[in-house]
Length: 218
Image (cartoon, rainbow, N blue to C red):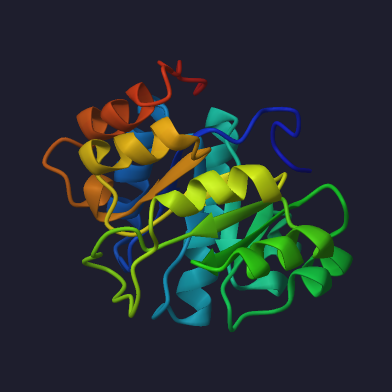
C-alpha cells in the first residue's frame, strides 16, 4: 500500500544519513516528520543487509504513523519485501522500467537525472513518478563532478511533466530560488540531520512552500 497516493509531491524530501545508530536515526526522523517533512528516503550506503532491514522496517513504521511515504534508495527487493512506498534509483541502479514492472503501478519510482534532461525524459517514458536533479550546490555528503545550473528547472518545466526534486548542498536559504523557479521538492540530509535544531530546520524548508504541515502521529 502506498501512502497518500493522491497527495501532491511537494515540500521537504528528507534523505537519511549513513548512521548506524537506529535510535538516533529514528529520533531525528520523527522530529522532522512532526515538523512537516513530506517524504523520507532511506539511504545508507554502507549498512549491512541486517542493519538495512532493521532500519528500513523501523522507518516505515514511523512514516506510517505520520502518514508520509518512505522510499528506499536502490534496493528494489527490500522495498518489495517490506511493502514500502517506493524506490529511488541512481544512474547505476536498476532501470526505471524494471522497477516499475517489479513494484507495480501503485508505488513511487524516483530517478536521479543529475543535470541531463534526456535522462529525465527517458525516466518519464519508463514510468517514473518523479525526477531528481543535482547537485546544484557543493554537498558535504556526495561529491559531484558537475554543477547543475538553476536554469535547468525552467527547461524541465516545459519538457517533463513530472515532479522535480532538487538535490545537492541544500539549505533553506539556497533552496529558496530553486523553489521560486518551480522545484517541487527539496532534498536534504545534513541540513536536517546535522542541524542543532532539526525541528526549526525542517520548518524553514516547509516555509519555502508556504506550508505548515500538522503532525499526524497518534
